[in-house]
Image 1 (cartoon, helix red, strand yellow):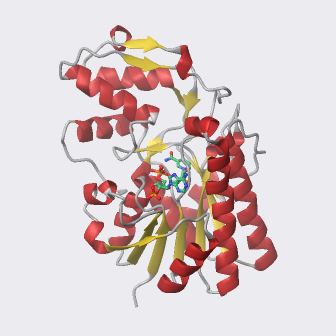
Image 2 (cartoon, rainbow, N blue to C red):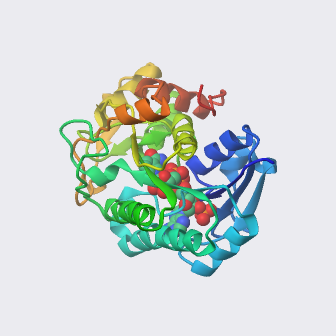
Amino acid sequence: MNKKALIFGISGQDGALLALFLANRDYEVHGTSRDAQVSSFANLDRVGVRDRVSLHSAATTDFRSVLQVLSKVVPDEVYLLAGQSSVGLSFEQPAETLESIAMGTLNLLEAIRFFGFPTRLYNAGSGECFGNVSVPADDETAFRPRSPYAVAKASAHWAVANYREAYGLFACTGILFNHESPLRPSRFVTRKIVAAACRIAAGSKERLKLGNLDIERDWGWAPEYVQAMWLMLQQPTAQDLVIATGKAHSLRQFVQFTFDELGLDWQQYVDIDDSLRRPADIAHSVGSSAKAERILYWRAMHDVRAVIRFMIDAEQGRPWPMIAP
Ligand code: NDP
C-alpha cells in the first residue's frame, strides 16, 4: 500500500514542491487550500504535479474542516505548511497571522490527538523565531521573535513540542531559514529583485525600490528544504531540527549577485525607499544545520548564488531543478 500524505497549504511554494517530491516517491498525495474550488493552484501546474494530487477545501482555523479532511484522507503523514507566511504582512495583519499560524496548528494537533491515528505531523517552523543571532542558531538557541509572524511561529513551535511530550504524538517542527524558488510570490524581496533585474536586462526602464540593504539572511534552495521536511518524518523519533545553509549574505549582496549574473551594475538601477523598512527587523539571521546533518544526513547543496541563477533561469523561461539532487 502506498503511503498517504496530506499537505495543508499545497498551493504555496513549499506545498507544490513537496507534492512533487512525494508523488515521485509513490505517495498518494492529498492537499488542502482554504477554497479548493477557486484556488488557481498555479504552482502545482508549474511543477507539473496537479493531476497526481487530490485537492480538498480546509481552513486550519476551522476545527470542523480539519476533522473532516483528516477523517476523509486518514493520512500517514501530515505536513502543516498553511498560514500567513509573510513577515512584512504580519505587521499589517497581526491577528490574522497569529490565528492562522497558532490556532491553525493547535486545531491540527487536537484533531490528530482526537482521532488517535498514528499520523506523523511536520510543522513548518521558522528561523525568524530566533531574531538577531551573532552565531548560527541551532535547536538550543533561545527564541527572540521580532515580528508578529515570528511570535506566531514560536507559539506553534511550543504547541507542537507540548503535544509531543504530553500526548506522545509523532509531531515535530522544522525550523527552516529562508528558502527560495521561482514559485515565491513577487511580494517576497528575493523574487522581486530577480524579476525586476530580468525585466531591466530585457530593456525595461523601471527602478527597483528596496528598503534596508544591510539585513543579512540565510538563503537556501526550496526543493532541498522540502526533502528535509520529509526526512524528518522518516526518523524513529520526532524531533525539532534547524534547516539552513549556515551562511548569511546581506540583501545588498543578493542584489549585487543578481545584477552581476545579468552583466549589470546594480547601483544604477536601485533606489532606497525608507517606507519599505519594517517596524522591527532582524539585522543578522543565520542557522546551523549541524544536527540535521548528523541525524538526517541532510546538507544544503546550493548556495545563494546558485539560488539566484536558478531563479533567473526560470524568469527567462529556462528549466530549473524542481527536485533536490
Ligand atoms: P506560501 O505563502 O507560498 O504558502 C502558504 C499557504 O498557506 C498558501 O498557499 C495559502 O494557501 C495558505 N495561506 C496563506 N495565507 C493564509 C492565511 N492567512 N490563513 C490560512 N492559510 C493561509 O508559503 P511557503 O510555501 O513559502 O511556506 C510554507 C510554510 O513554511 C509557511 O507556513 C511559511 O510560514 C513557512 N516557512 C517558509 C519559509 C520560506 O522561506 N519559504 C521559511 C520558514 C518557514 P490557500 O490560499 O490555498 O489556502
